Length: 63
Image (cartoon, rainbow, N blue to C red; front, side):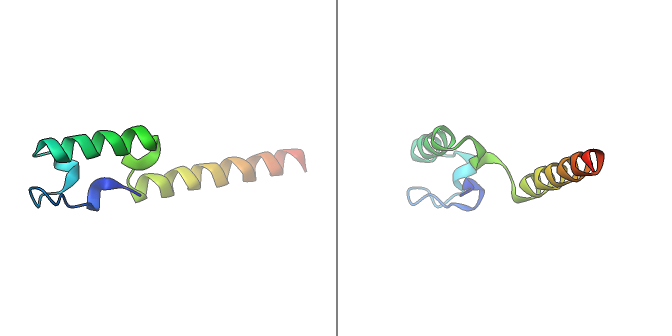
């Protein structure tokens, strides 16, 4: 889960902005639990496209 859409119950601001100590603590906890949590969906799609391209090139070279 990405934390860019989470809203803090303490200050009602997005957790990604880190406006209060609760936001900052939760943001740090989420980053420590999953290093990929900070990636946006577009970044994940781009990484997937690069991976698919690399596999296709490898398959083409071995065939």
